[in-house]
Length: 250
Ligand SMILES: NC(=O)c1ccc[n+]([C@@H]2O[C@H](COP(=O)([O-])OP(=O)(O)OC[C@H]3O[C@@H](n4cnc5c(N)ncnc54)[C@H](OP(=O)(O)O)[C@@H]3O)[C@@H](O)[C@H]2O)c1
Image (cartoon, rainbow, N blue to C red):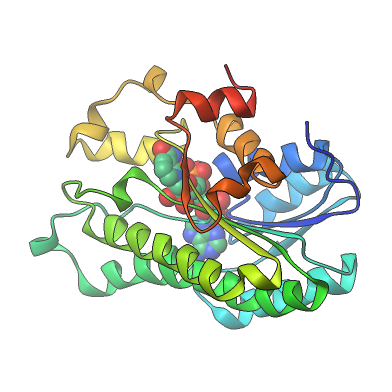
């Protein structure tokens, strides 16, 4: 396992699922971890379990003011931000485009797309002053092809991939490592919501078809190491057997 001692990692959407797993795995690797999400009690309880190297900061990523304040509080407590994991995301409300509610559609863009931009915007100056850092963003297969009733989700994930590419173009020479991770389907609350919708082929998958959240979490840790530099400005797919081997999952 990579040694993250002395490093500070911010994880958005750390109240459950992939984000919670990432917080635990990075803490086990020695990092100081900042857990953010809207569910104040959930992140506080997880941070308590992890111990003094963890801090919970309630934050809605759709609100830039809250994201900027969360990054400032992280720097105040730990002195730096070495890794940002842009993980917060939603898929509900699942709906055909011609029946979607514009404000609700827009709220998904506010979280999945603008939330990622907000994180990047807030940490990049901090990282650049320190000589660099890693910005890891959770992508999806939905970024690459249309999925019925997921127009908001597909559009947001495709756009987020472009943000990773833009960050790489503008800031690789300032030491910023920007990489996306497409995890495949993962056994989390999001897949429960997808199953309940019953709408598209993803909702027909069995629970046993999904990988555990620890897999993407371990991949994110591996992505902090030099071996992942080959994917700077690009996306890693955890469906790829070769990547699974490199991460030590198979
Ligand atoms: N599960 C899959 O099969 C799958 C596949 C591909 C990609 N992904 C991506 O993986 C990421 C994590 O999803 P998951 O599967 O772990 O789902 P999850 O269990 O539903 O977790 C989503 C997390 O995002 C947080 N969140 C949602 N809206 C937020 C907001 N406005 N501000 C801050 N945090 C917010 C939630 O916390 P609060 O509700 O407490 O705010 C929660 O911690 C997402 O970006 C998702 O799109 C998942």
